[in-house]
Length: 239
Image (cartoon, rainbow, N blue to C red; front, side):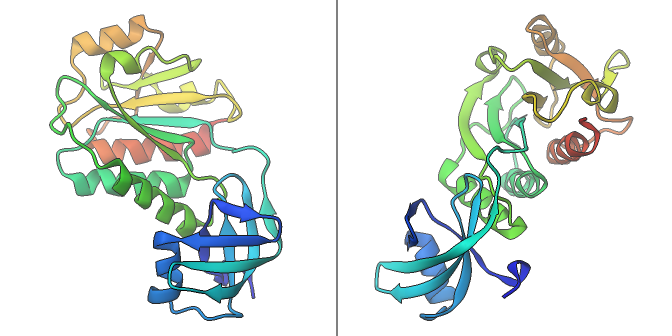
């Protein structure tokens, strides 16, 4: 069976030539897709490996699979972008941006709360499931981490070398020009503010902490649009 036609499942229980699917992954295989013994699927560990596997047995609580061979392997995650995004008031929009950012390619997604944030509660378990689904859908090899929310001040303490703040001001550098100065093998973080944007005080604090203010263009973008735009730009313009 061609790899692109295979259904991808995620497992953290892989040992030798065997893998187990539990909980939601087991339910999806056995109850939703109604796979049977002998069916061929793909198994990903979210850490760079994808295997072709055969369904060995299906019980009430788990699915056992036999690994037939390695399909793809990457020893290092090619994505080093940390996308820091303030949660949107409409949760559907935030979930959408996580799905799209994971499909395009990010290392991790960091929520944070700033002065104009309109939402201060998140269900990390749900966001992790959305990221997992997007990883499987796009047949990516690495599962991005959905990090617990931070305060804006704590976020500015990051040790990442390449730091950017999406901020609409005439003095801001163009995102494309800034990205072309370093390679994808280097860590990069970009901050995307809430619907109300960053305050001038917050922008000044970021600059004092080593962040470069960048513009994503002349148009005023929604938070989720800006986050996806930045992710695409990272993939296209980093050396």
